Image (cartoon, rainbow, N blue to C red; front, side, top):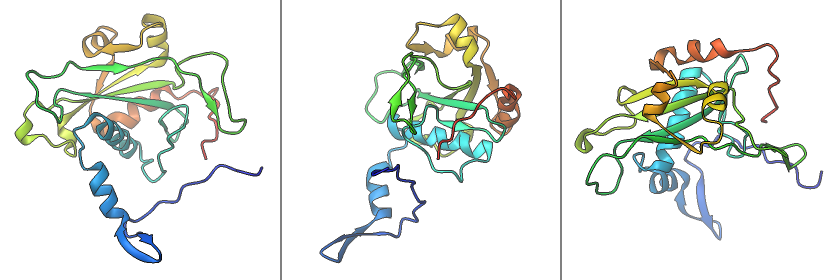
Length: 203
């Protein structure tokens, strides 16, 4: 293949940004500039994925932006991580409502470079991460004690909320999503392991 997929290599932050062979900055400075707002919806979502990856013991694997799903456990359970929080970076008149995107998607095959013909929810299990802290002066997304985690199998979403694009926390509770302690996420998620699941190669 003329243009094969590029496999990312884990960087250290010390790599230089150069112009005409002269260093103008470094990668760590870029990361600090671009990704220090962990309360914002975008970075908070990526952080939640990493926090869950740590719980599963797979945080040594780099995040893949274009994957069908976010994470895969050692037993092959595919996971979609969704995030929401009460506090936003901007000035607020009230706390935000907790809701998550659960739209069906066209899965993309990185081997054939083609999308599926049918929309569906790609992962076996959803992990809904709620940054539940409600005080701006003490908010710290890096403190896992400020988070709550709910697990719901995709089969339940498909049966109960097939056409929905978003779902509220109150509806998740009605669907009996399992609230789970952080240190028990791996055990609870791997209950959904199935020997018949075929795990695609994400490398």
